[in-house]
Length: 124
Image 1 (spheres, rainbow, N blue to C red):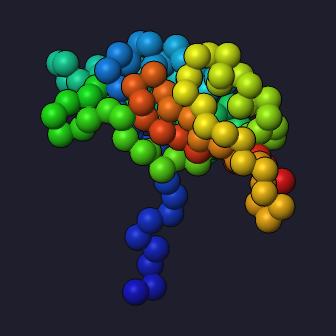
Image 2: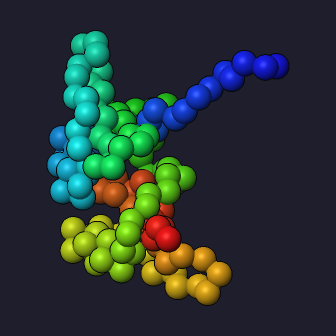
Protein backbone atom coordinates (compact mmCIF):
# COMPACT_ATOMS: atom_id res chain seq x y z
CA UNK A 1 0.00 0.00 0.00
CA UNK A 2 1.47 3.36 -0.98
CA UNK A 3 -1.15 5.84 0.27
CA UNK A 4 -1.35 6.81 3.95
CA UNK A 5 -4.65 5.81 5.45
CA UNK A 6 -4.24 7.84 8.62
CA UNK A 7 -2.33 11.08 8.97
CA UNK A 8 -2.96 12.08 12.56
CA UNK A 9 -4.85 11.68 15.80
CA UNK A 10 -7.69 14.12 16.46
CA UNK A 11 -9.08 13.25 19.88
CA UNK A 12 -9.67 10.56 22.47
CA UNK A 13 -13.09 10.15 24.11
CA UNK A 14 -13.25 9.79 27.88
CA UNK A 15 -16.51 8.86 29.65
CA UNK A 16 -17.63 11.18 32.47
CA UNK A 17 -20.71 11.41 34.69
CA UNK A 18 -20.99 15.21 34.74
CA UNK A 19 -19.70 16.87 31.59
CA UNK A 20 -19.87 20.39 33.04
CA UNK A 21 -17.91 19.43 36.15
CA UNK A 22 -15.26 17.59 34.11
CA UNK A 23 -15.02 20.45 31.62
CA UNK A 24 -14.45 22.91 34.48
CA UNK A 25 -11.72 20.67 35.94
CA UNK A 26 -9.78 20.41 32.69
CA UNK A 27 -10.13 24.14 32.02
CA UNK A 28 -8.67 24.72 35.50
CA UNK A 29 -5.76 22.50 34.44
CA UNK A 30 -5.08 24.71 31.39
CA UNK A 31 -7.03 22.93 28.66
CA UNK A 32 -8.98 25.06 26.17
CA UNK A 33 -12.50 24.15 25.07
CA UNK A 34 -12.46 23.84 21.28
CA UNK A 35 -15.97 22.42 20.87
CA UNK A 36 -19.06 22.15 23.05
CA UNK A 37 -22.19 21.19 21.15
CA UNK A 38 -25.26 19.01 21.37
CA UNK A 39 -24.76 16.93 18.23
CA UNK A 40 -28.18 15.35 18.56
CA UNK A 41 -30.80 15.49 21.32
CA UNK A 42 -29.22 14.17 24.50
CA UNK A 43 -25.74 13.73 22.98
CA UNK A 44 -23.33 16.52 23.94
CA UNK A 45 -19.76 16.48 22.64
CA UNK A 46 -17.09 18.51 24.46
CA UNK A 47 -13.52 18.72 23.17
CA UNK A 48 -10.69 20.26 25.15
CA UNK A 49 -7.13 20.63 23.89
CA UNK A 50 -3.85 21.48 25.58
CA UNK A 51 -2.93 25.14 25.11
CA UNK A 52 -0.03 24.06 22.87
CA UNK A 53 -2.35 22.14 20.52
CA UNK A 54 -2.29 18.52 19.49
CA UNK A 55 -4.90 15.83 20.06
CA UNK A 56 -7.78 16.75 22.32
CA UNK A 57 -9.91 15.07 24.97
CA UNK A 58 -13.58 14.52 24.19
CA UNK A 59 -15.68 14.37 27.35
CA UNK A 60 -18.68 12.15 26.61
CA UNK A 61 -21.51 11.00 28.88
CA UNK A 62 -21.05 7.65 30.51
CA UNK A 63 -23.40 4.81 29.75
CA UNK A 64 -23.68 1.04 29.91
CA UNK A 65 -21.40 0.70 26.86
CA UNK A 66 -19.01 3.41 28.06
CA UNK A 67 -18.28 3.12 31.81
CA UNK A 68 -16.24 5.56 33.88
CA UNK A 69 -13.30 4.53 36.03
CA UNK A 70 -11.20 3.35 33.11
CA UNK A 71 -7.48 3.41 32.46
CA UNK A 72 -7.51 5.86 29.55
CA UNK A 73 -3.93 5.14 28.53
CA UNK A 74 -3.62 8.87 27.83
CA UNK A 75 -0.15 10.28 28.43
CA UNK A 76 -0.05 14.00 29.17
CA UNK A 77 3.17 16.01 28.97
CA UNK A 78 4.28 18.74 31.35
CA UNK A 79 7.42 20.86 31.61
CA UNK A 80 7.41 20.42 35.42
CA UNK A 81 6.14 17.10 36.80
CA UNK A 82 6.64 18.15 40.41
CA UNK A 83 4.49 21.26 39.97
CA UNK A 84 1.83 19.31 38.03
CA UNK A 85 1.79 16.62 40.74
CA UNK A 86 1.24 19.27 43.44
CA UNK A 87 -1.42 21.14 41.42
CA UNK A 88 -3.46 17.98 40.81
CA UNK A 89 -3.25 17.04 44.49
CA UNK A 90 -4.47 20.56 45.39
CA UNK A 91 -7.50 19.92 43.14
CA UNK A 92 -8.32 16.97 45.41
CA UNK A 93 -7.59 14.37 42.75
CA UNK A 94 -6.17 10.92 43.47
CA UNK A 95 -2.51 11.40 42.50
CA UNK A 96 -0.02 8.55 42.38
CA UNK A 97 3.57 8.62 43.54
CA UNK A 98 6.04 10.74 41.61
CA UNK A 99 8.36 8.23 39.95
CA UNK A 100 11.92 9.51 39.72
CA UNK A 101 13.99 6.93 37.86
CA UNK A 102 17.45 7.50 36.39
CA UNK A 103 16.47 6.02 33.04
CA UNK A 104 13.19 7.88 32.45
CA UNK A 105 11.70 11.35 32.89
CA UNK A 106 9.74 12.16 36.05
CA UNK A 107 6.26 10.68 35.82
CA UNK A 108 3.11 9.86 37.77
CA UNK A 109 -0.52 8.98 37.26
CA UNK A 110 -3.75 10.53 38.52
CA UNK A 111 -7.45 9.80 38.47
CA UNK A 112 -10.03 12.40 37.49
CA UNK A 113 -13.26 12.96 39.43
CA UNK A 114 -14.79 9.88 37.74
CA UNK A 115 -11.85 7.61 38.52
CA UNK A 116 -10.46 7.66 34.97
CA UNK A 117 -6.68 7.23 35.07
CA UNK A 118 -4.27 9.49 33.14
CA UNK A 119 -0.48 9.45 33.04
CA UNK A 120 1.81 12.47 33.20
CA UNK A 121 5.43 12.65 32.07
CA UNK A 122 7.88 15.51 32.21
CA UNK A 123 9.10 16.71 28.84
CA UNK A 124 12.82 16.71 28.23
